[in-house]
Amino acid sequence: MSVSVLAKEFERLAERNAQLLHTDEGEGKSLEDSKARSDEFETNLDRLKELKSLLVKEQEFGELQKWAATPERRAAVTDGRDVKTADEPVRPRNLTDELINGEQFKAWLAQVAPTGVISENAALASPQFGVKGLAAKTLITGADAGSGGAFVQRDYTGIYVPYVQPQLTVRDLVINATTGSDIVEYVRAVAHANAAAPVAEATTAADPAISGATPGPYTVDPASGVKPEGAFTWLKVTAGVETIAEGVPATRRAVSDAGQLRSILEDQLRYDLAQTLNSQMISGSGSSPNLRGIRNTSGILTQAFSNNVIETLRKAKTKVADPTTGSGRIPNGAVLTPTALETLDLFRVGGSTTSDGPFLINPFGDAPRTLWGMRLVEEPGMTTSKAVVGYFRDAVLWDREQETVQFFDQHKDFAARNLVYVLAEWRGVFGVLQPKSFVDATTA
Image 1 (cartoon, rainbow, N blue to C red):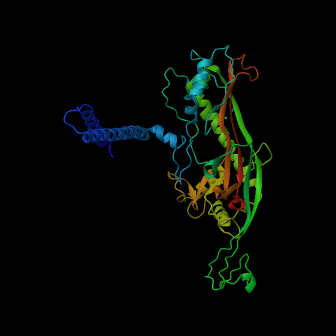
Image 2 (image 1 turned 135 degrees about the horizontal axis):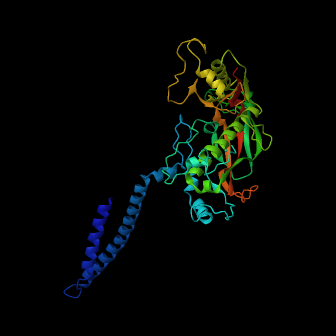
Image 3 (image 1 turned 180 degrees about the horizontal axis):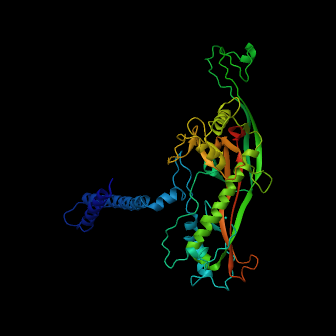
């Protein structure tokens, strides 16, 4: 029922009750008529209360609908990240805006820099400022035009072009989860025998064991309708939370200026933490404080170099997809070094990388880069002449503590020199659930 209909009914009943209330019941009215009017008044009053409740709810719903059409609603339901389709990388929220526009940071900055600039006598030991999706030790100053001074503006416009362009990463391929503990236990698939087969309807109610049938793995007795049994082998894995961190020095003036702070976080800390995390997920040794990366996980497959990088990656994909050698999953990604990806990009018709002729891959395409149906990830931290092919959804990254930022002046002699130490760190666990979903391939 619409709001207008509810409002009209409310007005009608209110007017009717007003008439009943002001009617002189003593002039020529019977007792029965007076009781009927009283009952009508009470009935109308109950309905008025119900209509009032409905109108309040409709008003609240209308306000909710207005909010749902605003940009804030998108940020709330997507946790600040753009909605990702199956063929798009996850785009991180703007962590710097989250920090410098957050109430917690504003309150702290107002305390240490009431005039807009952190005073020399202010003691800095900030709380942790949580930022999601967050690193060169070059000192950033507000006076040097070749450093942070390039970002000093009397009227900051908010226009900003990051040094690092968003691109598909290893983290975009794997499952992203969270944990509330410093130790994570998960189950790793070691082996699996697929015994699924068509089974005929049972023709007897006799117990197969008594009738002589021998049910068990890979055994089907059509006469008795016995279902075959598959075989699974699992391994419980325990992994401790590890930390990736980096700090960068800056002047108090730089921290007081939102533009320079954006440069520090976006272009240094966030990028460096992300690069290190991606490298750890691929090649981490597993010896604390390192994560155990895919290439150092026991049980993954290997693929030797075969003629060229394109052929090698295709054979690696087959090893994973074939249940007799791999997990039977269809690989959805391939992580390569920049050199290997360059070799692949420069292939020309006929197989040459030097002769004239059209490139096999269109260098002007805007679509996500794929090869043999696998999304390509360029990873500078990948070991030379190596690539990892696999179904990356069989690996999980658990965030114990997403990227946080803290500010200190107790570092070395920073307080005396009017400097601030900006520290960012991430804590979490990485694990491979199904080793046979990945291949360590040699590309040259």
